[in-house]
Length: 296
Image (cartoon, rainbow, N blue to C red; front, side, top):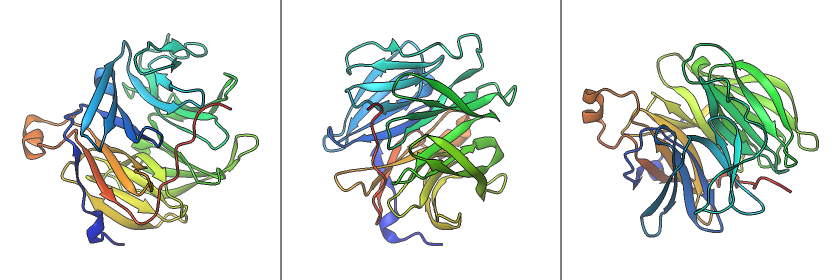
């Protein structure tokens, strides 16, 4: 297990986010889009200038994807929506899945190479294991793939679309599946890595081009790189305890960006972690997998 000198994180944006999440690199714009779920905020950050633009929406955005047709697909409190352009307003895309379920919202999602969006939900009250993983096809069809969770998180696909990882975060278990890219069918579920209790639990994650998976460990103060077999290869420690998601950007997709959170920390903890809620960055050797757009 290594932590080389080139993997020392620095602050990309001192954002002060309550629940910074879901970073995605837009290669065409050379910007990092991200959300602060707790305050219904959608952001886009330009690392070249340091400018960070913000939209405050009516409802929280848990996850999103860039659309092949332009704009964004949003996974919101009650269902999916389309934001056709930055200045516009979200328009519903499909039925309001969670309108009668106040404890449930969309939480984390990723597009596969075929343009399907896979989104997980969360039971915010942790009152029941009724969160699930859903697949949204480009034609609008929604399929529930797997249920029985509290917090469905960390959705990501390998570069060939044949492997899929995600986690039910409170279980501390990272799950691995085989995926049929033609049909969008998962099979062969197994536990890729079981993280020990009390040392951080798997939140958002991303694949790199070598088939390794990077996971942000919430309450663990670090991100880790796991081999295809599940061994921890690299740890990168942060000066905050609540990293939420890691993604890769820059022209070579070798610049890591890590969102973090302040939510739930005590005043004493916040005093010890003045950078909580910031976005951190470091360089890596292996490029991350690109973000595929939703749609055909």
